[in-house]
Image (cartoon, rainbow, N blue to C red; front, side):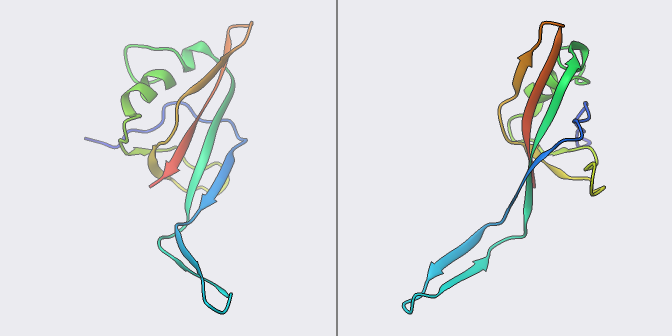
Length: 117
């Protein structure tokens, strides 16, 4: 089965958190020591502002965000579209609830968290 690709491209503004898993301890002499347990990973909030409802609402396929999130928010590995600034193609998973906000002009803004694998 091919790795699914996020159906809707995010807006250019991204909120990114870089994280590392480290072992950190303080020695008897008071000095701090640490060891990186894995390489740095990206955690990005994918933000979509003022999109048409056709980009969000349930359809017969997974070409919109709501059915895509419903299908893959159980830890399935996905491929996110190319990072707009670095050009990297990132592999990871959906790591949050899907937040939505509807506007009076029938536009929807939504967001979710992408965690790099």
